[in-house]
Length: 342
Image (cartoon, rainbow, N blue to C red; front, side, top):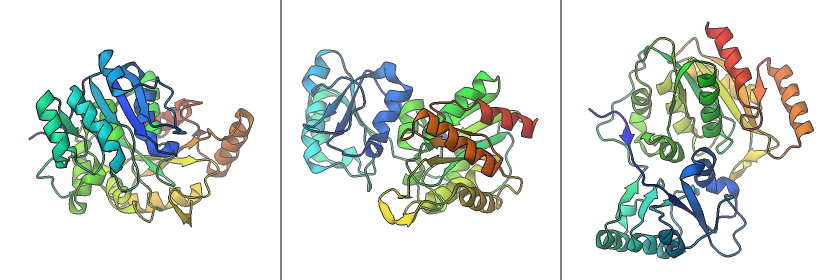
């Protein structure tokens, strides 16, 4: 039985971000540009859009003329719906012969006009958020190998970036490791994984067990996190990931100076210490030996001096290595993992 949903995209890519106004809403596009820049030809932004992926702006016609092969829906808005006025661009791309790649809850195949356009041109419609069928219920049974899971104080704080940066640092240190994607962007970057938030609730932990199967005792799965146990909308997904991954270690991910849960301003972002304690408590159900090995902080809103002070204070408070995974890398966390699990 195939364990993971494997998808193959044809490069180069044109990334559609439309008229989103928050960079966090375009995290799919930013993630692909960050980790697979060689595959991205450009972006489509609507007039006066304030968000910029840092790649050339171009139309569908211009993209097709230079050999672009796929249009990727590069946004992740709350609710997972493509805005109605975007469809004209998506359908134009399909009529031109570009494959359409979407990781939202709304399925491309449910749009009859788009299906017709794709059939006429031979373009493929690829819905990334389409989990395998016949997923099992989680067993909670211990698996061989080791696992480190990214957890968060909120959604969109850098769990995917942290996992990818940690995997790279572990490889550089000579450790055996594999990044395990659990969301649309991670799957688009690696080509495999299961979009956990599209799985029926009863099968969440079972799906995560499949994502991270038995492995060699010295092999680490670096598992992308989703949501937050403190998020009023997405805590269920986070709990399923925690129970199914049975992590030996967790890394807490956080954004500096974010006061409230993104999109839910009436809810306050928890402290790092509270986040560690709750994740260790809930994670102990399936791995009583779970521990926290580090903290990754998105400090993009801070100056270099402010970043250093912020991370130093946090490290003294928690007794753990604290890094910005993009600015500093994750070597300090890898060193801590090696010391704790040697």
